[in-house]
Amino acid sequence: MKKETHISYEYFNNKGELNDIEKKLFAKAKEARENAYAPYSHFLVGCSVLLENGEIYTGNNQENAAYPSGLCAERTALFWIGANFPSEKIKKIFIVGGPKEFSEKNPPIPPCGSCRQSIIEYETKQNENIELYFSNLNDEVVKVHSIKDLLPFYFDGTFL
Ligand code: THU
Image (cartoon, rainbow, N blue to C red; front, side):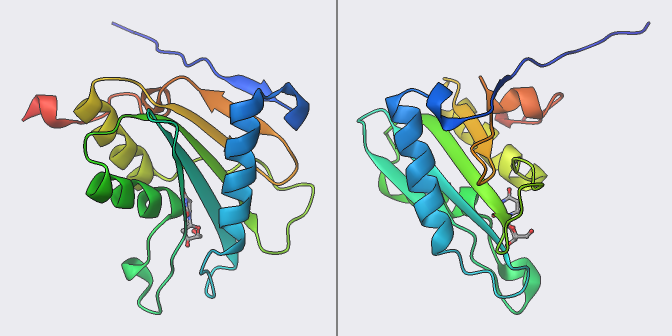
């Protein structure tokens, strides 16, 4: 039996289409990207996270000479939040990425598979979806309602 799944997403092609909080998250993620430590890939990613209490925290990718020891921007931010505000719900995540020498051709950067898995963990933990935005430096933004849209057939703790 053949079955199908589909995802829906929003696409914005200029920052003017975003609301105030989205604009703020975009600016914060962009700012965080500037501090990424990426001497090996020269690919800079920044991430901002909005909590239910209105606070915004950020992260960026942190690389290492032993490559697998590095960490993506999303998990740098999320693990810090998980460690410091374990009871605070996560409402939105905004990712801005691209090569250090950014060109107009660079598309919005979606989260890698490991980050998708980690974000799903927090959605399951809080039993509420997290809105996710990813972007380039050219004000093109993709928004999904839940990370689950980017990881069909996800695995989480409910299977254990
Ligand atoms: N990177 C992130 O920070 N987030 C992602 O979701 C994609 C990849 C980082 C990891 C590495 O430092 C660099 O981008 C190139 O892969």
